[in-house]
Image 1 (tube, rainbow, N blue to C red):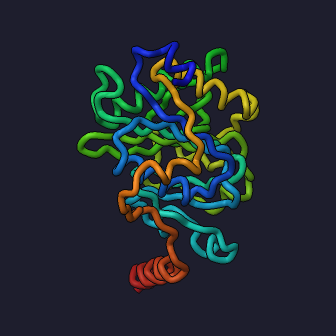
Image 2 (spheres, helix red, strand yellow; image 1 turned 60 degrees about the vertical axis):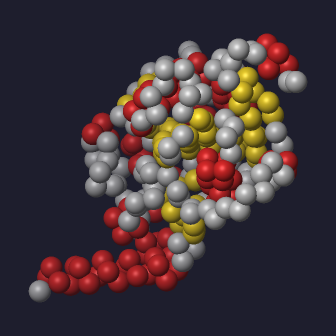
Length: 267
């Protein structure tokens, strides 16, 4: 039994999976499998992903959210994930943290988007203790009025997932692939990405953030570390993930549709 389990035997059990630069699509496939085929609680931490990749929510529309021509020109992969939420571009500077839980795992927590969001915010209160102006604004984690963490969720009959992309660092040029979404949070006030987001590295060292996140999780759960290569042996259930990379043809079709729409408006 892990030391944390001995110390926190009254807390619900949670498996901790730490990964380093695992491709985001592989991470999403793993998380969906754990959500739909496992009955355990999980925390998945992935410290970066190798290549710049756009990740959209399940209902995202590329033409509305992306500069699709630039994405195609620069061969940026675009993933439509299995959860809701907004659009992000992630790379080696992004830290991903996901909680996958049974509905009864957190006592008193109602398995609806806002209560889960509020619970996660309290957990990160512990992580960012001492950091100036950390708060939850609408569905984002911010320092003051600048976003550094975007969230997405999926809730099933008996389980839920809450995952976050933390902008520890990012390339300014990558943000030009993203448009300002039509359904942006009010506090954004139509600001460009350069004025809307900020880097976590200016507040907290990378390793310290991960360490604090694990310590905060240990106040809610008894953690047991599981290596990534052991997870496949936990469950042989056949599973078809729904997160996928959009093909070049699918992206080109959105450009044609947008061009046709502009043409019809000009006639």
